[in-house]
Image (cartoon, rainbow, N blue to C red; front, side):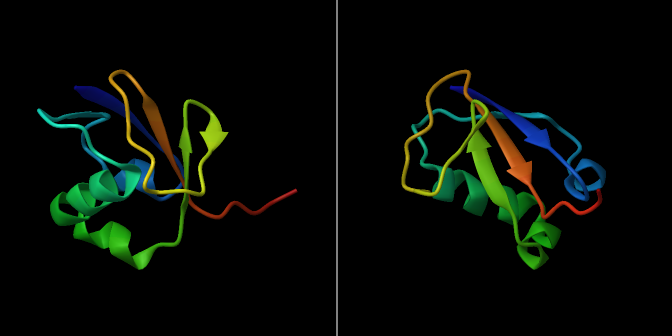
Length: 78
């Protein structure tokens, strides 16, 4: 299963890859935990998650092959 990761804001400097491949189905929370293991600095940030351009509040949602997961830190500006 391949998940496309779209980092925004500070995450663009953290992630060296924009794809995550796994043999098993993962929930959003499980993928965040996997990413936190590889990129521990993301634990210091508050962020929201969008799957296929829809913000998802339930992090128990199971990801599907070819989903796009956007990591959205707080934005500011006008």
